[in-house]
Image (cartoon, rainbow, N blue to C red; front, side, top):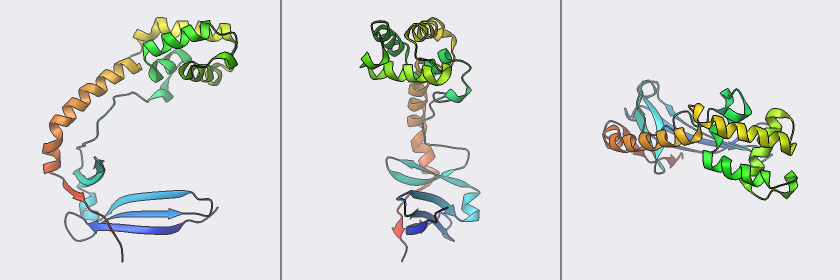
Length: 188
């Protein structure tokens, strides 16, 4: 295992002023980099967590957020079938368009539509085949069942829009109770 060396440390006083908010960057000889930003103060860490908004860092009261939730949009790991999986990944119209492209293609290599190609690869991952007739049947089934999947991309996109509007309304009040923006400076 290759060790990491610290490249830089930036810090700024935390809200109570007794310690710091720290950003530490380290890398190894394989050019892998990791950056960790944390509250290095027990008192503040019990009350706050870090979030960014418009590129600015804030200490936000625990239990609150200024981030917009997208509902269950990317919880594709819990999918029970290929049909449900692609319903979570793609809007219904995207699937219909891809289905049309796939129906008009004789082989995967003749498909030049990115979404259709992604759906074909997803099918291979789920069902271990890219046989065109089987893929077409699976996509057709997904289109027919799309409305039954409560976490479909169309549904979660609408939830995201609602959540975003609500968060934009609440954000100024949350930021008043927060600490920041925090300006991190290089440690001497």
